[in-house]
Length: 106
Length: 277
Image 1 (tube, chains in turn brown, green):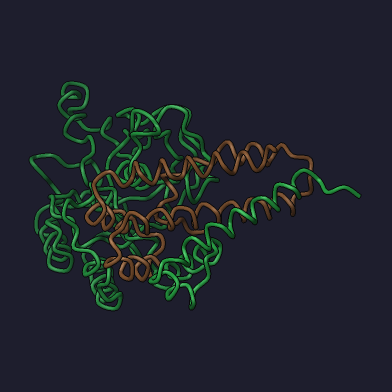
Image 2: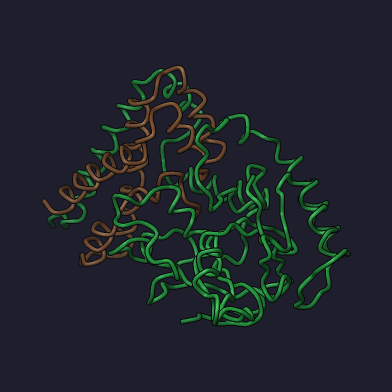
């Protein structure tokens, strides 16, 4: 499956390790992983939209839809949000990962 | 029968997903946009795969520094049709110019290749640059492993072609980033499109290796498969004596944004699927 433009900023190792050790059937694990992928995508897009000036939302969303894999999207965000956007996305992703780990551990 | 732990977790994850969806849909542009598109990562990844496969572009993802002042979206909105026609022109003409066996091209042949590439891509490509050239300009590809990008990096964090495995050692120039926090889009692309060159087979390697290593480190190379091509960075010194080894069997068409002079290399085909340790 093709990567999305922010994948390299998200570290999911702990989540994958945790799910792989669970005794449930593989189809349930797959469902959980799919849901987690959606959550990370949704959480990161929500975060980016919060940071990005509304006048650029349409362009960003359209370009993301046209070329979801394209690291030029990061360049666009660097220009219109700030040079630290990678770190910003990484921190947001880490926060979401922690929330997911909590959901998986409770 | 009580629900399993994972089922309980899935219920919580579904709530979390719904919460993010609601948050996004409060945004007016997003609400309008996602009325005709889903908010599922799976759908977006599927779409991404279809676009890349359909256009023959396995990413215009280049191992080069991110532009300081990108002209997005104009540049990435460039019609695929015109890019492909340049691609077809270059690849078609190259087949007539170059020998179809491992070789080092020089003289008039080299000038023809440089002219063909430069005119169709605006990349100032050179077969010989600053007096340096590899023993072979044309050869075969191998199948390279992933490289550890920072301490603690795992194969699971690398996208695509994970079956290539992870090299047990580091690249010739160490880690790409000092830690996971320092890991950026730039370093991600450097590893994704790294290439290996056989500097150790250069005639003067044993006497001039310090200078040569510095010269080749992170040197941009234009790599042309006879059906696609890629701009890539040197990250390793390879053990094979044919040409260059890439992890990616099928890489990317070249970007029109490469302005540095790059060395030209050409792959005839991918003939080996070997892991080089």
